[in-house]
Length: 275
Image (cartoon, rainbow, N blue to C red; front, side):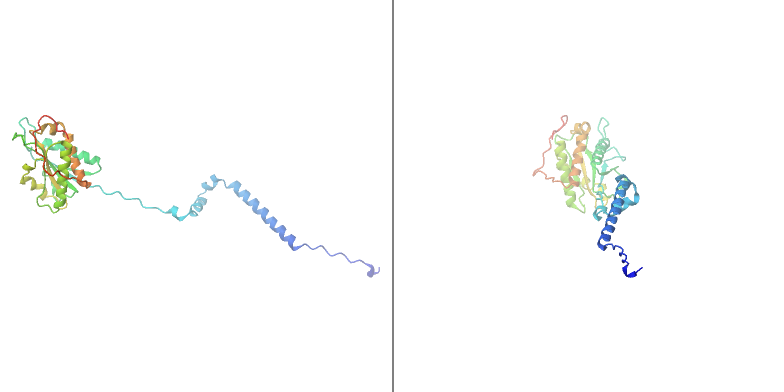
């Protein structure tokens, strides 16, 4: 055969580089689509949050501010109050002809004052007359509760008295406490302030020299067991509320402006004074 007449074999067809690249891209897209569809089918919200690792990953991706732990405010410490029940566990105090004692009246008032202040959120110590705890006793305030004579003296022997230590380290505090007790007690009970019968024994009351110098203290005689007996024994809650209001006035730094002139005492035996 004449080799010159043999037709040459056609060269194999060559793929275009552009068509090959397009096919590869399409394959990649299809694979990724299949993978994503599978993941969305398997990773339901329940599955995601049931997986501890995924949950941690999710939380770590949140903004940092969400993870901050802000400190909570620390409650202010309770203020301590001391209430001395006059003559309690020591002696009877004034004794009436029918056997009523000052110590029993004082204790009833002091117990009610303690309960009222505790309900207001304060820590309150009920103290005896010669309580061992009085030595260097520290509190925001201490008030000793007493009452005056059962004997009939005169028509003016009615009302209450308030006094602070004569040699207190902080006279401005003592003045404000006595002002609060005087103003609030008179307003609640309607009893007059009997300033004329405040004695040196009240100003130099033994507890004033026993407690810590930083403790503001006062003594109050809530009435006369003769002319004021009705309110002291039958309406003791009002008497206790008057003392409590005076103490709260001081602790809360409330205004307690006293009248320009003292209220003149008037006899008040059977009827209960009206505020």
